[in-house]
Image 1 (cartoon, rainbow, N blue to C red):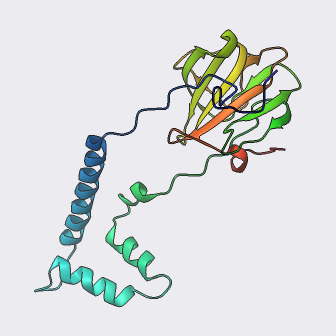
Image 2 (image 1 turned 120 degrees about the vertical axis):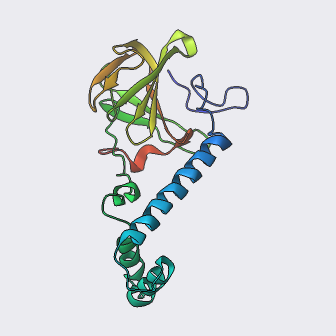
Length: 210
């Protein structure tokens, strides 16, 4: 059975999977360059619009700010006029990720800063995919049990520990609710949810968490 306490020699009840590599400075630079190019396209689109004689792109932008800015909706109005409809899709905010329970059962240990994982007492052996995603890694964890890592469409990752058998391979696409593995008899299912490589409390993402 899982020990729900931590100590300095063995801080977690499972073998840690290395976190993804941090993004390099070159990646950040490329993103900045892409943003500047997008801004230039926006300015070019303004330039191509019919402007009154003697009016420049900058004066047109300034007049837009002066005429449309107000306390509540001015900023939104200005951005809507500045960015063409064909480019506004790049500024859409990603939908928040919703996760389902990784198994049928009850929570034995809730996530905390000192012990950043959730463990479940399963009612059966089925481990379920918490959301659509891609299988990134399958490895042997503590006591030679299997560990499974899935990257979801939103960028969240879920890591399953104490598995007896895994029904998917690296690179496979899984759907929310799929039976992806069996839990080792006599073990709790341990799950670690990560965002940007850091373990997070999944309670706010999980539907039906108890």
